[in-house]
Image (cartoon, rainbow, N blue to C red; front, side):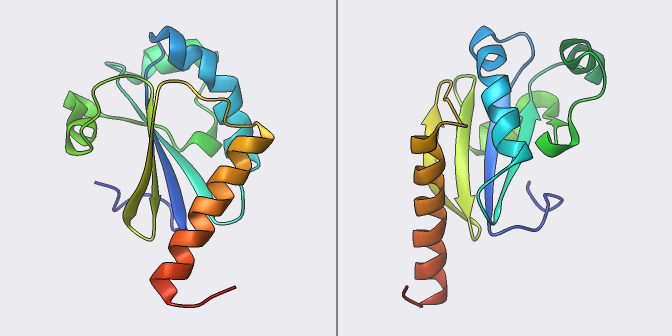
Length: 132
């Protein structure tokens, strides 16, 4: 499911759609995070849109590459993660689900960035068995 995702310590997997008002509201914050993420974090967006044309219409062109957007055809990946609402974001660190964030978030806020950094660092430390 995430086999073709970019190599990274942590992935913020976001389930999103261009027709979803809370998703649209969240997009600028998500894009800002994706453009300048905490160390080791990458954003991957799975869109529930029926086709790429709807996404391109929303972004007024191709989706920003930093979002690593892909269509979730048949919502297969969303079902595998138990996603029931949009947007839903899931933090995966070292292949393990660490946190679930239902609903829109201000991803670029200082508090959210600190939380993502802490969750990423704590899980990575446990996975390697090292301490700070």
